[in-house]
Length: 384
Image (cartoon, rainbow, N blue to C red; front, top):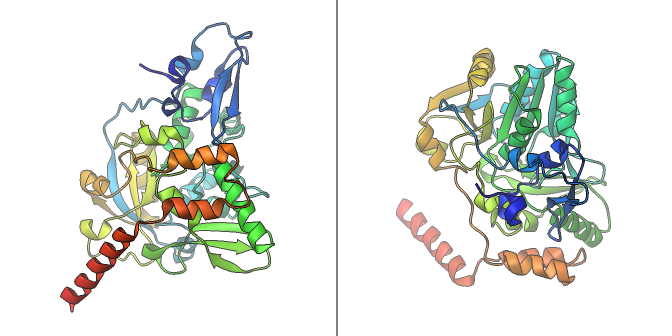
């Protein structure tokens, strides 16, 4: 099987850093490339050629069980739904873990708006993990912390992308009863470098600091969520240039275009995401405040799900039908991706103008905009 260390093919590395953690002589360092993504680099003077880096590579979907069940799921608490991107399932799992005197590991912003994995044993603090952060998160030393908590016999809920969870499982080396894993139905992982440049460009344009970014604000409803920038002085504005570049597949990690985990064979105990296409699966469900697609992927997950049923409005759905409307397949490379990152490397695109280029390279051609508008007009005439 091909691997990154033999080929240096960036599509074969998801950047989890497991290889660096398990190297017995600390010969591997994770280095940021010119696009802003981390890759392992081997110090050949230290390397003892044990090949553990290849054997423990997480970029392999080793799902064995074939027992996934799919559900439409909505948190019964309206308050908890408000600060969630979709149906509020993460917060239910977080509460379950903390009630077991455990800790939750999720994704949040640090003081400089860097997207990181962090831990909390306080359910109120876990609100910072809610909401989508469309950036490749920095795992820091989270795998080591998870291992330390488990060795103290604590429950741990670890949430992240499927490839990050694969890395954690490779690092731990064995299944652990008190580890609960939940992967996000991932679209792709955008460049942290592009996000940092975007933040700086926005702050220079507005001449003030950003407090936070809501990539999926429900202010206009779940089906019409918009990216909202909130500044430290309280001002809010819709700004979607980075978001459009992300959903257009222009700024994502190379491995995301050849993802081994964009499949129905999920390696986590749970998978959660927006239930796009729910109206075609269940036309009677109330989706005003959001609905999750929840898959239960393991026997451990099913046992926990049965304990949580009273907190959830749920209905089992056909797995294949639900998957057909959601991110269970690889995304395609945007035609301008190579050009965009080349201009970053050469310095043409920088923190003074990146928003301008994000818009320019993701702009829909005029003929497509006209065609789209014509279709809407015809549809409205027919519906009348």
